[in-house]
Image 1 (cartoon, rainbow, N blue to C red):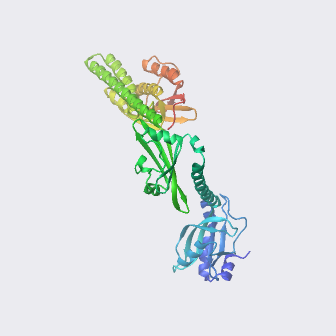
Image 2 (cartoon, helix red, strand yellow):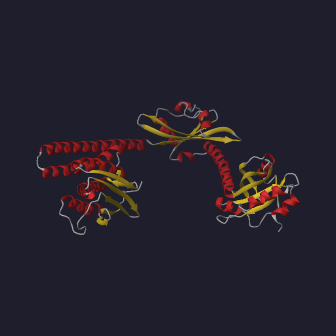
Length: 476
């Protein structure tokens, strides 16, 4: 096969300097093809008019190629690849143009002009992709639209000649181009009678039943299809109208009516239930905060350090439960994003433990983790207890420290890890007699069905709770 330079010398009018520039660009053509996952070409202006020489070609190794053989040395014709000839003529890029390859495959081209130092277009860099499937899909859509028009006309004809449309469960109304009703099935008669329109309805304007909801302008604005809802007393109708077009002229339309009163009533009841649930959670949260405030007042009146510690731990447990109810009150659902709960709870617990003289910082990392209310409450109590333990025994006796709370989910299990702060557990394998850790172990085993593990680090002890993901929990 002739070289690129030889092809250009025979079939183009390019000077040697221009050919050298094309050769240098052709060295990178395979790299361009692999990165873009497309066939890449360099076409140069040929001696003949309305044609270009395929000077270089690269098949992608990262995707399927459009071509089975090389087309280097062949001519690209204006009638098959107009974008290439247009770019050579104007010196402007052409993006998204359609063409037909030398192997008669419909493809999309992106064409960029190649210019020399003087600004003269000496070739084009072309990227091609097969769009045969897209073209076939477009043909199917056109066929479907044509079939739909034929079906609409058939329904219109059958409505006037037979009674089978009376068997359709939904109400059906046919109307002509003047918006005058030409047919109403039995179900539509029943629904219209319920909103005060008595038979016969044929010959009456559609606007008499539904005002201007199906005016011609609305069909033009929405592409020939109009969706609407009509409320009359306790009856709610879902309306779907489609215009019938023949030879680009609207000849009428079909209007379907469906009684969705029961669905709307259920939606209303769900909204009421959601509002009630939110109010319940809000009141529970307020009551818990009130109890916490009363305990805090009692704690301040106490002179015993041990009693103050007990009060403070009890208050933090109440805060843990109240935080979950606060988020439940916000969204009205029975699931909460525990990462948000953990972030708010951690700040509240650390702030309440300031009496111990530690300036601890808490960082919450990891994925969103949606938990059902009962499991979120259990995990909030667990996190609160572990945070208290970390603050009291953390930082190895120093005044400062950072605690990291990590959340992650992998497959059927989720994990909550609390590390940093310099907390040291003397013997992690032996159950602790501290009430807080006893509560933690009980909640993990009975409410989460998980386990607690301790890992010694260079800066203390990391605590990890691993528990199975239950149906009703999710990552999103």
